Image: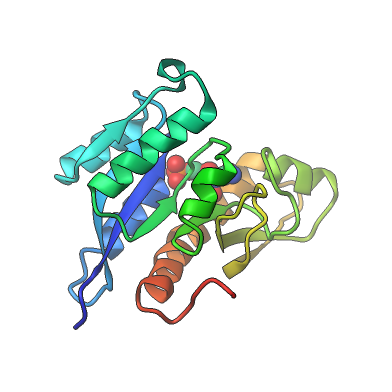
Length: 197
Ligand code: GAR
């Protein structure tokens, strides 16, 4: 088998999608290995999960940097130090500079809890329910300078049930996220999908 792609995961919180990727990468025939986990929040619970798995972790706080660009340059330095091939954003709640997204274009992917291009940004489930949609879902897409705008790799759909709360819908979508993200990373890491030229 060709060398596994070296994957860094960026998180801000509990990291359940990170955990799904870590677990998928334990399979011997998975084409990627998780070589580091970064968080922009020092107290992100997902960091403890990564450490328990023996995965190197790193954090940076925006408050230590004079600009977003300086933060993003430091982040790229960490990722380059890990010899990163692919960056997976998994609940990474931070707007990135175009300098960062262009540096990693075609090699950075994100999971978003909506059927993009619908419901970019925050509070996706509450907004979808307020609109009365009958179907929701999640998207794994390439990261580009525009927020939640890059080309989609895979989507999964779930039904909306009468009386669903945003938490109900988030939980139903999350089950699909945990299946979809490892599958999308497998496609990218094995060369079966690539950023459209
Ligand atoms: C996930 O639902 C993910 O799709 C979403 O945050 C959650 C993180 O959960 N991401 C975004 O909203 C990005 N715009 P996790 O930390 O348990 O993976």
